[in-house]
Amino acid sequence: MNTPKFVSARSAAVVAATAMASVVAMALPAAAHTPVILTAQDQLPWVAPLVVDGTDPMGLYGSVSKAGEVRSAQLHFTAGQEVSIALVIPDEAPENTLTTAQLPTVTLIDPQLHVTQLTPALRVPITDEDSGNNFLLLLSYDATAVSGTYSVIVSSHAAERFALSTGIESEEFHGVLRATVATEDAVEDWYTTPPAIRNHHHG
Image (cartoon, rainbow, N blue to C red; front, side):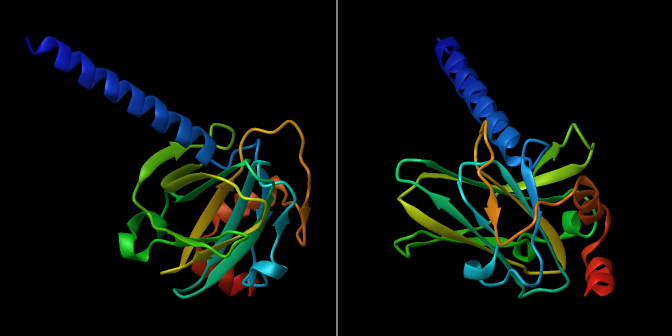
């Protein structure tokens, strides 16, 4: 008599695992994602990098030396497109030793000035097969876009590195304004340099 319940629970588990695998695959800012390094100049959304088509897969990388810092970007959408945002950190010290309260948080402001606060609720380990680098997925968010420009603001609560993975699969890159596409070496430098050392050396 318990078999149907077992099958049902197992099916639910398979569905959940499949869904999480899909989220993880899109969350990782891998080779298919166009990389941009966010700097101390990118604190205000309207002067920070602007992704011309928010569905383009992007990896936005930041590193901060203390709590209370912010890094921003903007994403432009047309109505009905998918807003897809995930936040990851390196699965390295110091990030993987931080408490939940010390992890970065995300504020999303839509074109109608509606504010959504996103806080870490996950610590899912994932690996970039291209580089071998290890990450922890902290959060994933999806919604249907209204037309206009969204602002994304990451707030730090410790010295930490983070990466925002935005967009979905795309056959064409539509460009990014107010920013330069980063090199593979720059992304690797971001990953291998702890935040306090990076900010001390690079200002």
